[in-house]
Length: 375
Image (cartoon, rainbow, N blue to C red; front, side):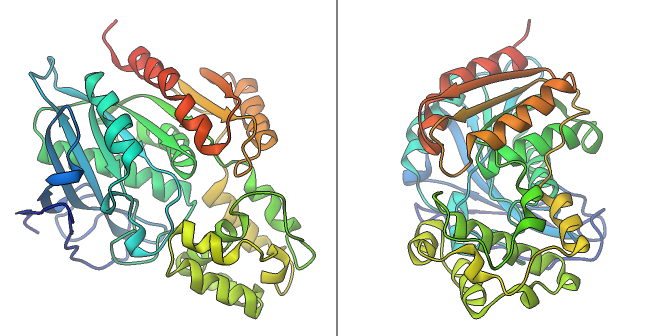
């Protein structure tokens, strides 16, 4: 399929074409993962300081059951690239929702456009931001499916290099929350999945981990929890699992309240969905326990962050007052990574989920310099 290039204003509308196919190996005949099908030059509020070019692209990637499309944005620094091309930082974003209009790159976001991306560009890195498969493209976004999210990142780097010839092969991944989970899966999978690229490290802040261990304990008895956004997160997880693994019959586990919760998250972004579901207990969503071994196995395959086998350095930051990703769960992840001998840099911050992510930026950028800059 030929890639088309068009101009867009601040609305930055992407026209996505294509259907999901049966095999994850290729998107269509002759189209490998990372093949770009559409390219849009961004203007107006989507531009950032220090970017010579800003383009949104649609590309083929791989979902839980086969080829799916993703969108993303690539920013290329001003100036002359170093020998070998600009190093790339692939940014994996946190939870926005699973409805198509929740795609991260379709809405101007002040912190990223005014702070994060300019900081990375000033550091001498091109920036690739993926929306993940199914967000703004055909199919349901498989929320917290770590392997699918990692492949969206990897294939996004392939796509960025296809449209920006000044980009090199060295790269790092940097993610927050859902994107932190994606970053750690990327670190584990990319060396074998993309040997033509040279992944040098992964930085993750607030990674949701060990959630798969809670699945067989879940049932109608769970009350409202003193955490933030948990009912919406659970509903998105179940909605993605229902779409990617229909043989599990997720609907059979849901009450009327649960069915309505899934309808909410399939149509609303995370802020609006949380407002509608904040007073819903997880137990009120479930008609029976989630203790089917097949369901647990599917959840483990999606969510269990590998704790051994990494061949590159990791950075993990965690907020001590985080009520979305509780610190004890991250502490368990860090302990297991340490025990396996992983090259791991850890930081703890006094803030909450987003506050810690912002506080971590100087440390994360220092880590990126350590793994990406020439010795």
